[in-house]
Length: 206
Image 1: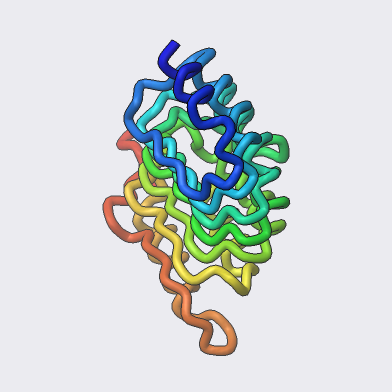
Image 2 (image 1 turned 180 degrees about the horizontal axis):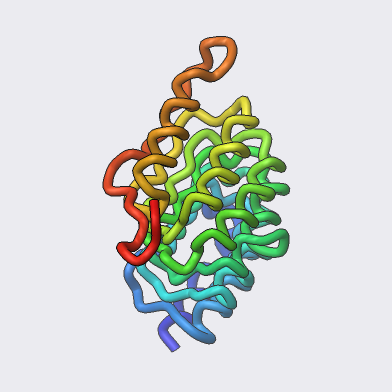
């Protein structure tokens, strides 16, 4: 397959630092294969797989390998069909726990994350000593998940910016969390994007 050929072609590049395979139609078995292959590049500092339907199986395979990349500072998982299962301790939790230089994590446009995934991700975030930027817009997150995430983010001294816009948090809760972010102790600078278009579904009360 094309993925096998790509992996074979660069598998010997142990010093590879940046890898971008965005929008290549990687899915199913190929996503798992690619995820496993990432362990061949332990010196990666930037990895982007945006726009490929990895789903949870592929993301879990990827995270298992990425967790060995001690120099990684950017992980881009936008629009990869990432769900709640991949946000737990064997997925993003392993990455946040082991990649001690990770500064930016982008999981935008993964609606299947939802509250369950946000709760799991909030636990994982507490294990990261270095993350500065979290992008989680368009992730189907409601009020419960948002409260857990923001609570975790507030407790991270390294965190400076988070984007939770275009979710299902509800206007009232979004305003409350926004106000809380502006009143952090010690004058800490933290930018929380949460107000834009955060509406609950019409059938649910805000």
